[in-house]
Amino acid sequence: MLRIIIILLPVVAGNCIRPLEIRLIKNRGDVCVRTAKNTQVIVAVAFLLALLVVMSLPAMAKEPAALTPPAIVKLAPVELSPELREKYSEQTVVVKIRTAIAETGLPAGDLTVVASSGDAAFDQAVAAAVGQSVFSPAYTADHKAVASVIVLPMHVKVEKYVPEEPTVQEPPQSDERQ
Image (cartoon, rainbow, N blue to C red; front, side):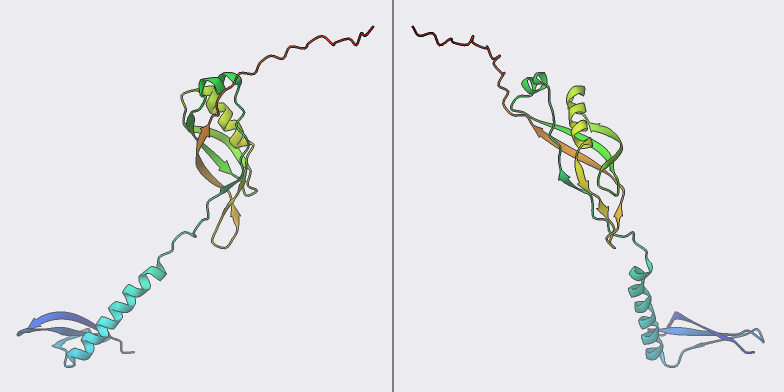
């Protein structure tokens, strides 16, 4: 069985670059070195092979499937105590919460405060609201729901605090007409 391996190397021959053809005949161990005769054809073939390899690189690279991130479907209201509503009246307070979203769209596991408002009670109220919220899960490129972890920057706008007036019950008026 006779196998021939041909290697083309560019070499400077005179004023131009020509491919150098090296033939290695396996059975006899002979090496034949000479400059190629059809330089233009060999260069064209080598160029096309290089172009084919470069164009196929993106196809060979395996990229992770594109993921559609989860989205808020229903955000539970943030329940603030009267003291917190008075303290943060007419302010927007930012709290970043990290949570896992299950394939069902519900928060799963622990909720972690990533960036605090500076008030632990306020942070806890926002975390409780996120824990009661409903999300659409993350989806893969083939529309399969998957669990994911997200960080939610919650911008809580606290409305103007108006203290509630205690209601005083008036005694019933009697209908005495005489």
